[in-house]
Amino acid sequence: MRFSAMSTRNWLIFFAIPGVIILLALGSWQTYRLFWKIELNNFRYEQANSQPVKLPSVLENKDRWNFRPVYIEGQFQHDKEIYLAARSFQSQVGYQIITPLKTIDGRVLLVNRGWVPDKKKSPSARLEGQISGIIKVTGLVTFGQTDSYIKPNNQPEENMWFWIDLPEISSTLDIPKQNFILDVKSTNPSSDIPIGNQTRIQMRNEHLQYAIVWYLLALTLVIITYVIKRRSRVEAREKEMN
Image (cartoon, rainbow, N blue to C red; front, side):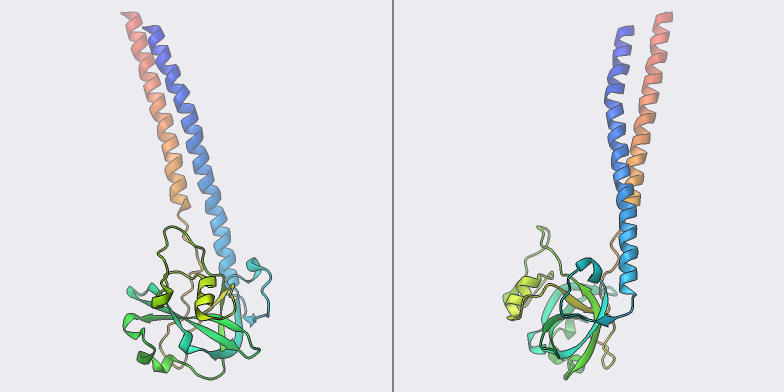
């Protein structure tokens, strides 16, 4: 019986130690991700709140220009606007309006002008927001999104877009291939819509709670192992005495 109790304790330790190590490693990984994301969010915040500069002809460094405020002059091509669907603002569902901008130096850029409610999707329902002529646009540089299996498919033939696929948008609108999009930072002063400043600068950071969970699981496993081991010792001692 003594052998059996010792064997049980040994097997318990054999499984518990690797389990604790794995749980601690997972907690440490989440802690690393926590501080990494804090640093990244701080960088994005500083970028987005820096002084706007004139948009250069070429953006050579994505890290330098991502979420950086820039300004450019040009004219909107409203006949080519597209609709980014399933976008919410203050608990209302609507669309974000993306419109090509023909700059005064001959380039064509994509501009996310902001959010409109469903009832204002049609340009005829928001004529006051369809700015004409040469204007100065100020916004944040963003580099679109990457595809993934969880994203719904865009429907270019219906002008219904669910995520920003810059190559496909460029091809559909028959404009030069774009590698970034300009998110308007402020609302159009002559109209309430589209409502600008829709860029999500801060990334969700839930790594602290994940780290706590893994560390608590490791602590729980240690406590359970200790209790079981102690109980088996007590039982073994009692049997020896009998």
